[in-house]
Image (cartoon, rainbow, N blue to C red; front, top):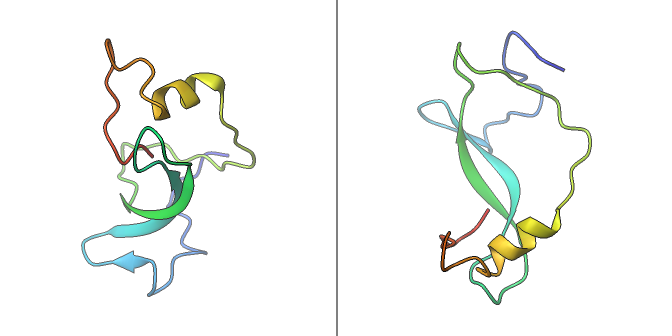
Length: 83
């Protein structure tokens, strides 16, 4: 669902930093041999030219696993941490 204004219902003093940057939950791999693990990453607040969507479900496709494992490293090297 697109929104005109940022959804601040889950923004708290704990996850909103100075300068319009918030921390959000994500999964990342630290290396080609590590598992995907929960982490937090900084995200800037949406800008006027951005589109916001509500994500209700997500998944991982097999090409994501190839990327995490750096199996395409000869043509598209993976930068770690891979979020």
